[in-house]
Image (cartoon, rainbow, N blue to C red; front, side, top):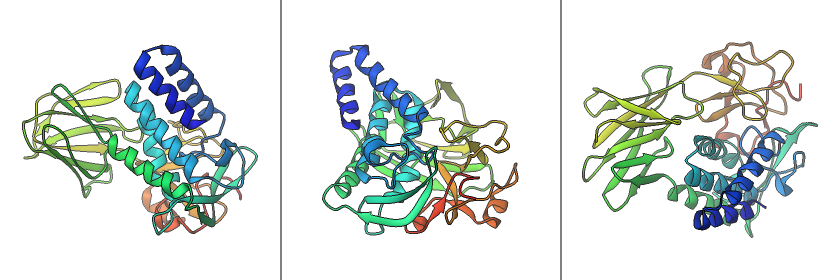
Length: 313
């Protein structure tokens, strides 16, 4: 089904018939609102809301679909979902040896709220799909149009195109509010650089290679340097945030008695085990760590963990 959605996008690119795109965008919305996509950005085997396990193939195809939608529409919400999937559920499905397969999940009557310990590699399909996911990501890191170079993700990478090489590196934050500091260096001629405003960032600011503030032109969820540059530092500022189980931000914080997730940057926080106690709100990174809540990472691949607060208690 997910591959067919990508096929519809290919038809739209060739024919420009809006009916094809409308079908895909409706299916995307239905998957989100229907609970088929969990807060970690993943989808289960057989595309069910409640099932015992996920599938590397399905997650990679969902990731691919969001990359394709981002490219075709330019809408930041699709890049944001691709980023969510990559940093959370995609990582939890991957095995320490690099392969992909089936991660058994924790579910209630609504949808997934965490991951079980069991994780089995499927070398006949999922491992190939997972590697394809990385290939698709590589092909969507940058885009160049006229005098503007777009970097779709605040990731570390080195890439080359017809103009020159592009290197993106992270620098250590020197303030708690600096969630990510992305330095982009270019070879060849100076170019205006464009980045996305991530869903987890409150503000995006830019500095020159010498630390001078750079003016940005902001439109439709994207920020572009007003002048061409060969080196630029983008600082993505933000704080801890809460979302509901359908990936929607809760600007006033969690509501009493309602399950929610906690994020900082592109990563969700999870507690080890099959339940996560609801922390006091507002909270801090130190307070979350003291309660055993940590960002989903490679360290939790083979451990049971819960990322929806208030479930399984």
